[in-house]
Length: 610
Image 1 (cartoon, rainbow, N blue to C red):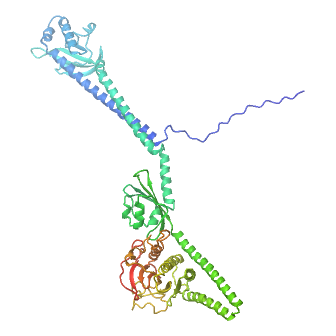
Image 2: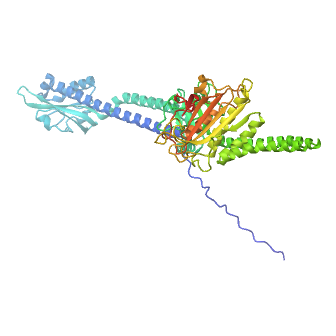
Image 3: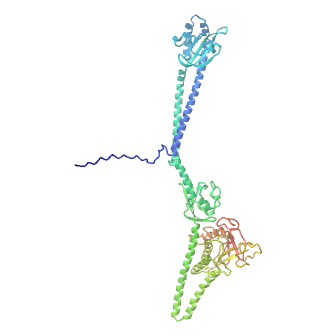
């Protein structure tokens, strides 16, 4: 016996909600505005048409009242009507006359009746002899009034006027009227014209609305109000969140937008919208790059306290809508580059020392092979004494480890290039004297760039100098008149009476670098600290070191001075007690020299930067 499998029940398809809400017919902002505007235009046109119709109908009814009133008075005042009223058969005399008048005047009916309201005339002969439908009381009292009443011909606008005899008595009544249907027929022509005008106005309004909203749709890219709102919120959040500075300028180079990062990088405050970029107090080189016709790519510029990388591009084609300016903070990277340069100097110094040590070792070995042992010992110890003397001199005078390491590395690097780097006898900086606010990066930036420029200048002027190329470095704690020519001690101005001067009020770190080069032309003193200024002719990678020195000194409230002895003398003074003169310190824009003429310590000071 075979087994049969039970048939399986058919599966029901489960209708799961898709999670999609009801779709709106119109999503874009332009489409929604189009619908709203069409509805408004249609409502305005319809309302205007209704008001015009009501006004026309009211005027037509007033005209009908005036017309029937004039007809009723004309018939009531007619001598033939007065004569027929007293005749034995008024209908025979009045009916032909009244119908002729009705046909000539265009009214719907003219009814002549006695004082009891019994009709003598009527457009429908079967209604003659019957009672008039309407009010006649005021006519019997000698008054003429109009009313809208439903009679044998339907609703009508009618007037009842009295007929007077010779003794001024009311002997009969005359009623003239126009049916409401005939009045409406008179309005059919104006009504059709009004409807045509309304339809035309609606069509013109609809077409204009469609064209305006088509343009709006193109500008909004078909996005709806929610999308535009979200886009604006994202736009604002992105502008204020990114670390890159962003500045938008219009065609007149006025600020349209400036995000928080750009304000911080450029040191801008207050309301910037609509202000020309030339009035923001930015460095001249930065303003010139922003306003230049050619786009700028990764160009390094200096602000009051920052090193920024500048990029510019034009919005649109041709003259464009304006310009986009982006700024990246390069300050930290520049500081790290200085530290890396210091490490590189140490490495090169070690390499140079290893090379020199190998040469000396070969010389010593050769002297030993030649049997000149005493000369070999004397040669080896003399070289070691020279190297050790420089190391001992630097370590003994400069207790600050960063400065000591930098000086040793720069000395080895200068020696490899044939330049002797010496430390003056009055140089002395004990460890722990420098304040925490004066960072090691700033010290490397200032002293490293000064020594590099001095070494280059000494090498360049070696051919014309009667002495070998030499760079002299002074690094000490100074006070009193040595700190910018001011009496910072509050006393007699002798700020070095206490040893290193670190405890004297107004003390400063004095860094002075002198070279045996050709010096700096007095006419170029005002430009020496500007970005891009350099005496080197290759044109690449130069013109930033002294600008960074000036910026770092200004950021720490110090000064930079340019003097002259055998060659150029550059002196940097950094206060140990903070920044004098407020946040900005003395001085102005990056690279702007302060006008501080005068001499110091017998040297010819050519210029100074605050």
